[in-house]
Image (cartoon, rainbow, N blue to C red; front, side, top):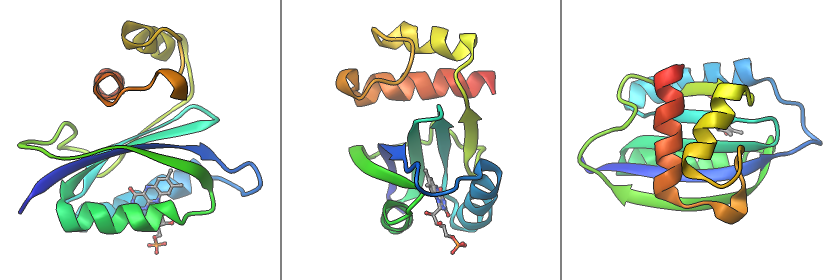
Length: 136
Ligand SMILES: Cc1cc2nc3c(=O)[nH]c(=O)nc-3n(C[C@H](O)[C@H](O)[C@H](O)COP(=O)(O)O)c2cc1C
């Protein structure tokens, strides 16, 4: 199996209701049987998601996610083959909100204390996600 990692960000669609608990329950239900793992950060405006797993499974779930009306303006910033997973134990970890600890993590890698699409680069984003994950 070719292991790959896909990273994208998107904006919440304010016109469509969002219940993150329902969303994450769906993620767990669908991802676990496909050995898909990853992490989702939602700050109230943007979603950042890392998906890891077999190439075909990652591709299929991304195409499904991309048509989800709960978010808009998806920007794919990385899709690469990898040797190992960054989030091996989570069928999808959810981190929500922007507390002081999270702001401090963003400032380690970016000039601003929250996600800013203008200054995004995939390596720093993965560093942020890993640091957030260790604090979950
Ligand atoms: C930001 C975001 C991230 C999502 N991530 C996943 C995911 O990792 N796995 C998943 O199965 N569905 C995910 N979804 C939901 C899918 O778009 C879709 O609603 C779901 O896969 C449908 O599953 P169901 O047919 O079992 O209801 C995500 C949706 C959004 C808005």
